[in-house]
Amino acid sequence: MKSNLINSTSVSSKSKTTLTFIDAVALIIGAVIGAGIFETPAFIAANAGSETVVLFVWLLGGGMSLVGALCYAELATAYPHAGGNYYYLQRAFGQQIAFLFAWARMTTIQTGSIALLAFVFGDYASQILNLGDYSASIYAALAIGILTILNLIGIRQGKWTQNWLTVAKVFGLLLVVIVGLVFASPPASVEPIEAASGNIGTAMIFVLLSYGGWNEAAYISAELRNLKRNMVRSLLWSIGIITAIYLAINIAYIRGLGLETMAASEAVASELMRRAVGTPGAWLISLLIAVATLGAINATIFTGARTNYALGKDFALFGFLGSWHRRTQAPTSAWSMQAAIALFLVLLGTLTRRSFKTMVDYTAPAFWFFFLLTSLSLLVLRFKEPGIPRPFEVPFYPFTPILFCLICAYLLYSSLVYTGVGALVGLAILIAGVPLLLWSRQKKV
Image 1 (cartoon, rainbow, N blue to C red):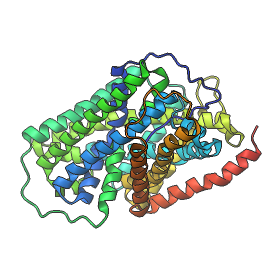
Image 2: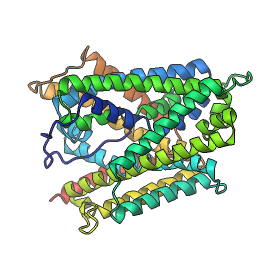
Image 3: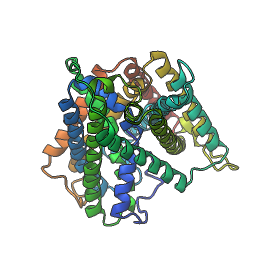
Image 4: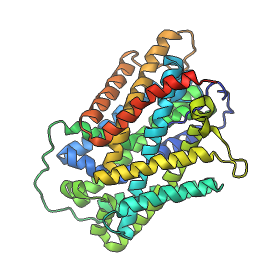
């Protein structure tokens, strides 16, 4: 669900090609396999209704992501630019749509992702030390506040820190798979869960949330060696590896917990470890996931502030976000605004008493709306700019991009129909960007 807004008029698309195929695969897998896979299986189990359907929707999610990846491979190789989605939308639909994308990223997509990750951190930190009825929310707010303050005073995340946090996350994931497949005892038979009609759409929202991030490949297109060959290969290999990992961990959850326990769990990985090896195992995996999630929150805070800063530089209405503190060398106003919105979303999730799910509700409609527009941009740019060289052309054009458009439209429909108050709030905030767009055009420098 992440993307970086870069001013296409001020940032050159000619970057040094320093990234290899292995670098690209590592970056994509690192972006996709986040904290979501430790949280979403419970919601998917509750909505799928059977073990077979659970595994099918995870496999289907990999297939859908593959279709989208082929479309992005054409866009990224035809328009290699650090702006990614923002650049495609600007070329296909103009600056107005690009503005709304930037607005949605600042108020919904990026800040919603921060709050969502913070709630995952809260759920697993609460397994270590519970702070009461609102434990997850307290931890979530503390994580956002402390990490924002650390960035505000000039502390930068080191590359080695982020790498070790990623290692902790992957180690925790592999540990869960091994325990679930080797050490956990199969649960006693339980009655199948009856999924309400149409809830497969809801299950797919959570599945594709866990697959979200492969589109980040668009933002390294200007730096990837042998772009035509490596962009396609890195996307195909990454999605294949991710799909295999996701299927393995869900098989481990099903074998070690059963569908009913999965659906009811607030921290499914910890529950599996507790049943297999006792409280110490649950505490260890909770610690690993909490630490890894902190790294994801910090990275999301860091990149989000840069996006808001770029928005402030591009549009006079948000000029206050475009300030750069000389002493700390940081976009302090952008960080402060981002933290305020993210903390409000933590409050929203707390009031609805569905924390993580509310954040998915809040972010999903805007995310799938702009994903739909990005997929449409492939069709539009083929028509508007037929002379642009396309090193890689999506196979079976126009059927493949049309299929991906239909997938995005279905997920947008599902996110609007099957989500609650969070979706309404997110949609209202997105619509609020329209008058701001009109006002910003009058104030344009």
